[in-house]
Every structure is written in C-alpha cells, then in structure tokens.
Amino acid sequence: MLASSMYGSLPLSEILPEVRKTGATAIELWPKKHGTQREELDILGAEKFGAMLKESGIGFGGTTRYDLGPFKLTEEIRLVKQLGGTFIITGGSGEWKNITPEQLKANVKGFVEKMKPFAALAAENGVEIGIENHVNNLIDTPDSLRWLADEIRDIAGIGIALAPYHLPQDPGLLAGLIRHIDRKMTLFYAWEHGMGCTKPMPKDEELQQMPGRGKLDWKPLLAALKAVNFTGPTEVFMHPTPRGVPIMPTLAESTAEIIRGRDHLDALVASF
Image (cartoon, rainbow, N blue to C red; front, top):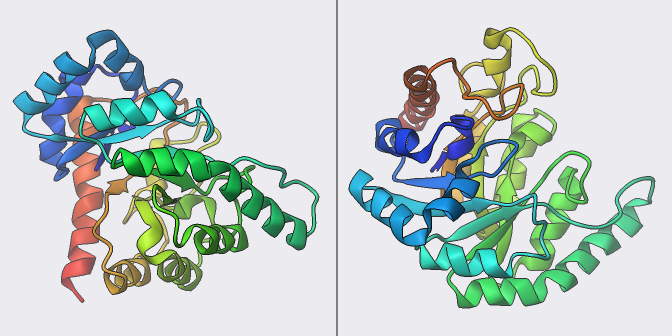
C-alpha cells in the first residue's frame, strides 16, 4: 500500500503513476496537514477519481482520517466502499493521562463499546476501521494495544493499524505485539523511530525512520508477520518535517526511497 502523504501535497495526477513503481498495488489517501489528496478526491468526485485509478492500473485501499476521529466516520465508510476500499485509519478516544493502568484498561474497554455501532456499519460495507497506536492518545502503550486487541478480537469492522515508530524500539516486544494482535491487524506501517519526526533535521537523519536506514532490526517483526499469516496492507512509511512536503526533494527521489525501503524488507523476507 502506498500512502499519498509520502508525496506531500503533490496532486494525484502525479502520484498515481508512481504507485506501481513502488511495488504497491493500491493507494491510501491522506488529508491536510500531511497531504492534500483526500481533499482533492472531494474536488474530483468519486467517479473521476475511480477512472484515474483504472487508468493507472491500481486499486484503492482507503483513507486516514485523524481529522474526523473515530466517531464521525459514517460518510467516509460509504465513500470508501463506493471506491472499493477496505479500511479507514484513525485514532483512539478517551482519557489516558495521569490515570492508573486499571483505569486505562477500563477506558480502552469503554472506547471499544462506543465503537461497536461504527464497527458494525463498517463491517456491513466491507470496510475495517483501523485504530493506530499513537503518542498522546488512548492507544499509546504496548499494554493499551494488547487490551485493545483483546477487546476487539471477535468484533468485525474494527482492527489495529500498528505503527512501530510510536513504540519502544525493541524488536522482541514489537514482534510479540504483532503475534498478539494476530488477525486483527488492519494495516502495518514499516516505520521505525530513527531520529524522530517532530523537528527539522538533516535529511539523512530524518530518513532513519525508513526501513534499512535506522537501527531497528526488522527480521523479528517480519518473522512475526509471517507467523500470523498477515496478508493485509503494509506501508513503507515516514513523516517529513514540515508536514505536507514529499519525503525527498523530488517526485522521482521520493519514489526511489520508497523502493529502497521495500527492497530492504524484501531481502530480509527472502533470507528466511
């Protein structure tokens, strides 16, 4: 899966021809401030966008909608279905600061209860809402991820978008989380922390978020994905600073960097 945000605010007419070059088969659209492609879809209309996808020989994966949050996805679910997509990524909701682990666990359970009607609607439309683990969010820690996975185990229409970037960079811990989440993985970000993404830095440091650039040993994570037979979408991913710009200075360089990250992961998988 290719995240449109990897190309900042470049137009879809320029991004779509790059999708297959990266090895991806489909695109996921991001809104401002990370990209502008989700807003561009509204301007183009679903019919014209669908024609552009067909012309490019690619599919539609879904959208990331942190801007809407988990409880305002009704119209987005219908649009994603219309375009043949299968997921919407968003964050959790609920109190997480300065509370006990017991209360956090209870809040995760309460969040899942609130999500049940939206999960049901998503499932009816062949869509899954992927809750991403994110800093400063209800789903922020390894424990909160485990509790979320346990609570949604038998609920259709809701899963987890796992972002290693936002977790301790311990390959064993990350692999264990993958095994615990198991078949509730909506999307996997091939994204490590590196030097972070919250302040300007030299490009070679910023790129350490990408597989093969930073220090994370990806082999245990890939082995865990294989062990649980994960066949869902994977995004070679990072955030640039400032947001809304391509990860590299040009379109071609951005595509080449995504290909390099994919090749790194492919070589590791081939070594198993």
